[in-house]
Image 1 (cartoon, rainbow, N blue to C red):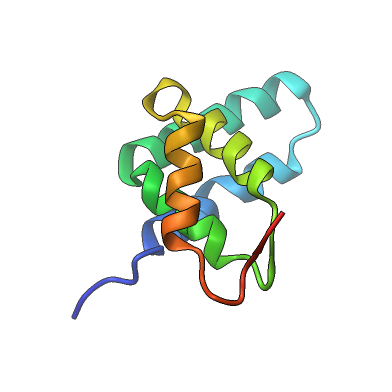
Image 2 (spheres, one colour):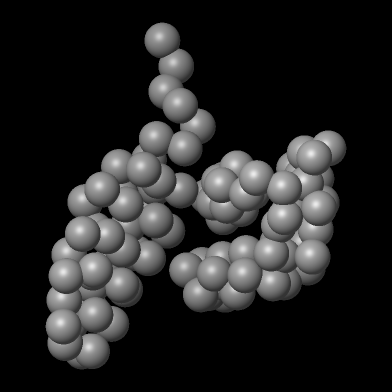
Length: 98
C-alpha cells in the first residue's frame, strides 16, 4: 500500500506545531519554528510542499503566501520563479489564483 503524498507533512506538523503554538517566548518560538522547517526540509521536497499548500486551498489561492512560506522554509534551495511554476503546474481547475 502506498503512503499518502502529504503524510510526511502531516506527521511533521503533528510533532512540531503543538509546541510552537503553546510557546510564549519569542526566542523559543524562533527555535521551534526552525526545527519545524528543518524537519520539512529533511523529508519533504519543495515541490511537494507547494502541492500541499495548493491542496489546502478551496477556491482562492494566495500565491504570494505560498511563495513566501516556501522560500522561508527552503531558503536558497528554491527561487520565486520555481515556486510560481509549481503553482501553475499543479493548480486545479477550480482554483482562482490571486
